[in-house]
Image (cartoon, rainbow, N blue to C red; front, side, top):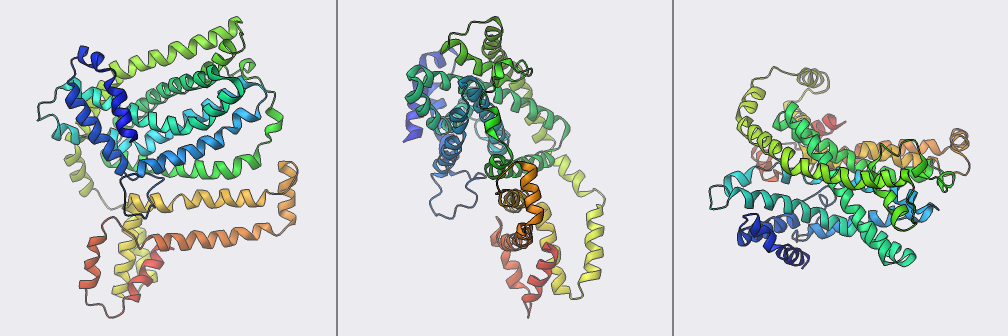
Length: 439
């Protein structure tokens, strides 16, 4: 239903698309297909989804963003100066949407299948280029709608309809900044890394994204005393000229408070013109470079694979061989050990499910250990005198059991026939070797 409404919205601008030389019917077909694929694409938030119906995974993602937006709304509630609360709220949104673009939308942005599927067909370059931009816009619009809804309702009830509309406009300008920064990041990564290495870096971005969201939810409220910042005025802070969120947040002071001081007007002007300038750079300069980098990356993919296959053995291989000689004596056990050793090093799905534990467990320990009253130093002293630090031992055991549990699952599960075909009398030896490799 939402996809149909979004496509109807795109159709409203049909005269503009025709002026640009775009075929409207082909544009809508491409967008409809891409939105359908988005609804089935597994993300960091839905990779553990066990349901059979995977056609509405994007709704689960939107529900997650609605929950995060509800939590972020406390920034607007906590600070007595609305400008400060809005600036910090927009900073949080900028970081979140950048991580989202890098961690979740990268597979779509760097997908070169369009070059093989659409370009051989009667689809001109303008239609294809606009479809990519509108696909990105619609994807971000859905996330923005889910994230901003609680805060827009809050601002509307407390400050009126104009305040709610202003927050929506501010969030859109933050999106323009995020798109520019992510384009610059991609160009730099594509310039200095290979295709395989690029995907590895993005995978670690996904892991860092999950860790930052979960640990931030638990740890930050424990470590920061927000009562000290309730009356802070970011418009007078020394970093105001270096933080785009303060530029855009200053619109509140101009529109809602009638603050026409020269300093405030300069910040508001920066918030208007800098994102528009960056949007021009993205569409006219960076997008062309990005497409050229993608084509070069795809053309060099086979060469990179050959070079990687001919690469000398790494220290990790020597370390694995030494461990096998010291810990294993049975060849069947060695099969389980070596298979799991390679899977944990190469499987991005396994890393995405397992690696966040090593950031979440310390964060959860800090959350539990710092639950006492008082300042941070007083709570640390109370932790040393208490027995709560023993809880870390149990968390460490949990950090061993979950990876061992995760190794049972694989995207290439059909290849498990290999184990059944082998003449193994004691399958437990394979599990024993796998457990040793995991530990």
